[in-house]
Amino acid sequence: MRKKIVAGNWKMNLSSDEALFLIEDCNRLSEGVKGVELMVFPPALYIQQLIAHNSPRIQIGAQNFYPAEKGAFTGEISFTQFKAIGLNYFLIGHSERRELFHEGHLFIKQKVDAVLNAGSKVMFCCGEPLAIREANEQMNYVRKQLNESLFHLSTEEIVNCSIAYEPVWAIGTGKTASTEQAEEMHAAIRTWLKEMYNAEIANNISILYGGSCNTSNAKELFACPNVDGGLIGGASLEAESFMKIAKSF
Image (cartoon, rainbow, N blue to C red; front, side):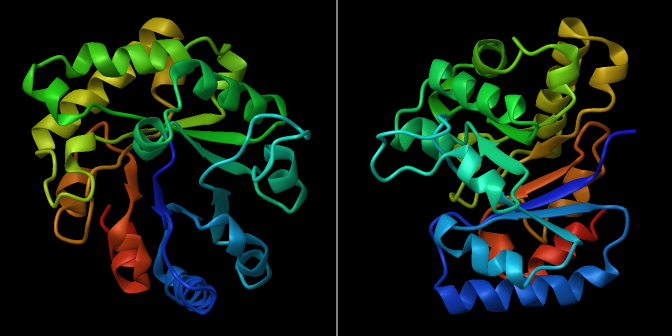
């Protein structure tokens, strides 16, 4: 049975003290969350501090990393360095990494392979910008992202991945995909998983919604048959709203 997951992407926000207060508040409030896997992706600078103050109820992951174990890559942090301090979850393919930092399909594939070869877990992001949605090409666009960077994996590897669908036009804009739009894409992704692998794998991989999910729409979105949780942006920066979303199943 696939997991219900609510993950918070803190992006480039919060001071050190604010991050510490937030994880402590999340830990306290998470006691009331049942049957949901919780995780947060903080700025890399704060990760070791947060691990020291975290509870086992919340997983901490990395927003970004470089897919080499070590080397002359000034300013980068390797997945092995993150893994050495206790991280097991890695966010890969987020729209901001694709658009702002020009991460292409091949580089994203390299990141996926690096994490899985190290025995860790991937949260793979995919989703279409507004122009693609308006042209009604979103299915082809998202399928290509998956084909180029994820669907090369073996059956043994793919089970260590979750997928976050993020309609780019709904991130940080206040717009949200309708439940029908979200369910349509999530159902399509699950169908593609079945085609590429098998029904058992398709039915056990969690697919999250990642486009401005908040306390107002989480319950409706999470009620969709193929939506298994959310990758939360702004609403994850406040513990009460984040945990309210986690209780929306």
